[in-house]
Length: 366
Length: 141
Ligand code: SF4
Ligand code: SF4
Ligand code: FES
Image 1 (spheres, each protein chain N blue to C red):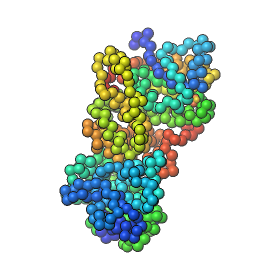
Image 2 (image 1 turned 90 degrees about the vertical axis):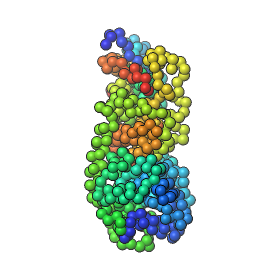
Image 3 (image 1 turned 180 degrees about the vertical axis):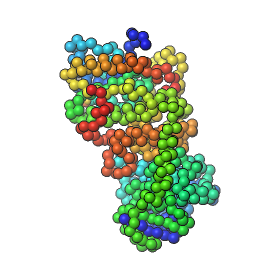
Image 4 (image 1 turned 90 degrees about the horizontal axis):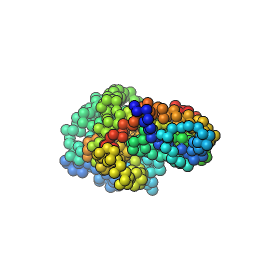
């Protein structure tokens, strides 16, 4: 569609863009990461007051909460809202919309080519100027920043899919006074008319970030090959998930796990005392609470094909289990049998909701 | 392996086809192993894929899922969904290095008593060759 070039830092450029939208009454509110203090703590701000805009840090390398989940709370919205979010959050929200957990109507999505985010702990401790400077210089030189989430390092979907507005960060040489804003939809062009800057007809060219893509793909292969000790198997799975304390935090924060009453939180899979007694008599020992493997492998069966690899599940795990790496690794396989990419296309049906009459005969033993 | 070892194969069979097929195998006096432990379900699509996982983790040596042939499901499209879900379970098992050969999906119609007996015998042989499900000895589940 078209591109606007502003002579400013991308974060200033996007604040200017948001100010334009609020001032002209083109949107009623903005949802974006926001600085809370000078120590670098952040939250996800939902603001209508333009004086709050200065605290918005649109591309802060953090994911405080998954915006996909938050969007379900505030849509459908009766008036237009501008949302600044990471590419995986947008894909996560598209997956939620497919599950009728919100709508993209009345939402203007603004995303960026993403260099990844710091683990949650860093956002809590505070992201300081020095950390951001390093992060931005790695963005320019298309390096994988050393301190971002493991799954971010291995993410190949850092170019937003389906965003109305894409701000180019990765591979842009002069991030101090060069803000490239790509308008990908009609509504973006309409809403941003009169923003100023230099306008030309240009679409985002993946060549700008091809160097990072190569590194990410290599890192993905490395990560997937190293998640499991050896070839996997029940012992490896136990080694990884055996530390789980059963808090289910990983599924609570997951943008895909939308079920209000999760099967694994219900009593459906509970066992009675007789079962424990029988198990004890056979094994001589038993781990309590039980069903850790059922929860994790079961969750993979239920949702892994839609996992966007956001990494939030690993971040919140009190037992330091690399949940996201394992889920993304398996999710890549379950999605690929359906040629599915989570969040690629709103019209693309969730694999378990549709079928073809002739398919998958290799899984059936005649 | 002890010749007399009889595995346990939890078998979810849909009422309209596979379960009736198993019945026919019985009334036709066809032999099939006692390893098969049938559970009657209204349709193969009633089986949440997590049931298969649960049976596996609780120590079934094999899990068999039997449904009507494609196009013959009494709820019209149930078994097409079953097939997709089963493909997911198999893929998850394979990705984690779990023994995916211990789970099997077969289409067996109400008139296919002999096929039921063949599938039951074949699958039991496979499982006997693989030996006991190693998860039985794990306490960390
Ligand atoms: S967050 Fe960690 S400890 Fe909690 S349920 Fe998930 S894997 Fe287990
Ligand atoms: S499973 Fe983990 S990495 Fe995947 S979408 Fe859910 S929270 Fe994100
Ligand atoms: S009724 Fe047999 S598979 Fe649906």
